[in-house]
Length: 240
Length: 240
Image (cartoon, helix red, strand yellow):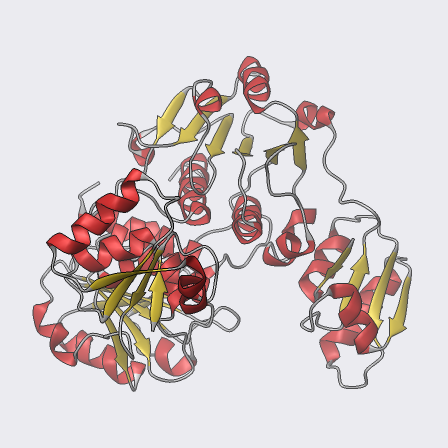
């Protein structure tokens, strides 16, 4: 899979994520920060080469690759199931139930890292996956948080509840999100763009929480809702 | 301009927004809610007709028009300058300084209406405008809030400050957003996706506010930031 962009490369290096090769443009029409990035790549012992813009464009599939295309190998490396052993008393898990849009997924990954979440979970089937677009929209932060694929979300929720997690689903309910105690081991479930959280997943949640809205609006863009809820969790955990 | 989608038509009717004509699909493969929408259109004395799917698709420019395409005339009707006379002691204004992405604009419109904002302001130049995509992403809510285009944002900010508005710019600063008093007459300025708020606009703000973030992340998707800030304003104004 070819991913692209300067922030994406920076995050790959910062995460020490293994890649096959990094392609830099051989154009002379580049700025100082481009050479800094080549230096950083060299210093971190990544394999790299230079290629014409049109080769980079072909790999990236778009012209706006910022002179950097990265071959991350056949597949994005999702987290292993034992990632759960690394969670702690203060961990936040983000669960996305059949999200479809890569822009929403990328924006949620960005918000999750920024709000100090520890793990993102998606179902194996009927879900958006990590693609070059998702990685680009996440500004490379997809490499900074473990992303786990599970076969059965309802069963996964049962499992983390046994570990002491409180699981909150974003859905119409009587529980205003900022009146709930969202500290400690918390998981937040966000639903599909059109239909929300599936009933069988919803029934496993400890509580449903909602964002009060004016003018009879009944929902927001899912990446906006996720951002509002994640930053409330972050705020409460910070003690504010 | 042709806009499309069922929610979009519902909001047009609810706003009593004048249109040239409404085109419904003549396909028999439609559900009950489609006929309800035709009835609603009829009852509200809108001009409408039926046409083949391929005609609708050509007008909408995409196949996912949900059987409804609306000709809203040559241009979207922006608000008139005298809209300012209709603001009150509790009004919220959202100012977007050279936003570029139609998905961000649409999502922000949706959040603004949901968070009970009263007015959205964009500059005449170098800004995303209202397009069919923006309207679709706003789920039609672009018809539910006045949207004003101004020649000079800095001058506009000076004007509303004279009216008693406190103007907050979203930018790196020492002011954590939820520690600020955001009640009363408030304007929120959001910047361009890449470069933020322009210096000359920033210098007119009464204060800059920021969202604290973990893991050295320094920004979020602008529609997510706007959502977090708008819902904090809404929460404070609700007294919570």
